[in-house]
Length: 301
Image 1 (cartoon, rainbow, N blue to C red):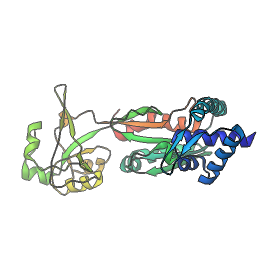
Image 2 (image 1 turned 180 degrees about the horizontal axis):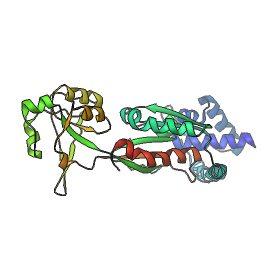
Image 3 (image 1 turned 60 degrees about the horizontal axis):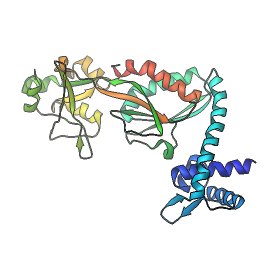
Image 4 (image 1 turned 135 degrees about the vertical axis):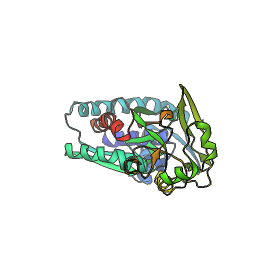
């Protein structure tokens, strides 16, 4: 019976991913082990479940019918197992989390460290990357993302808060170039935009109830916020940065906030995880703790 269930689990994983290799990675098995398990399943059923080529993997008609039944059955089994986890008072086990590098280091990691100290049986494995990971293929239980989310039917999301963004510059720069007092003034200043690939992040402001997104085209462009903060501190221009990143510079006077009355809504921060009927306790505890504490770390609810 165990071999039968393993074969079905491998089949469902391969069908969902359209790849034996991806299914193997998700299950912690070798590709050959997944292939053999599915071959044994096909032999036992007496049908071919997949059309296989060197470049693609597709379900046969019989495979599609079998997948419809098996995926539902496995979901019920997983739900039954996770219902016991829900009843636990203390989270147990390992959770893999993907977080943006700077937001993760400054705001999320301190929360997770305290959470790990409070729950001795919780294992927290954090990967710091600004690359949007594939939770299924890369094997993550949870990811933290900022900005607008793509419409992904197999993922769930919960808003954690938003980043409080600040327009700032060094006192030496403002002394030399003057202080902007309205949005139109930005056009006459040197700016330090955040650039990812060929895309430049717009600066977002609110003036008399209306939202404005301003695209900047400074001659110094970075895809790293910390480098932008350093350049702004050196007097290279105006920068639009998360308040949590430049708290020390603002407190010590190395940077000065300008156009404070026109602060925009910032960018929302989300927790994203694979869609499931029951959320494991270890994942739920992490999400709840981030909801409770991250707004105070990032400076804005």
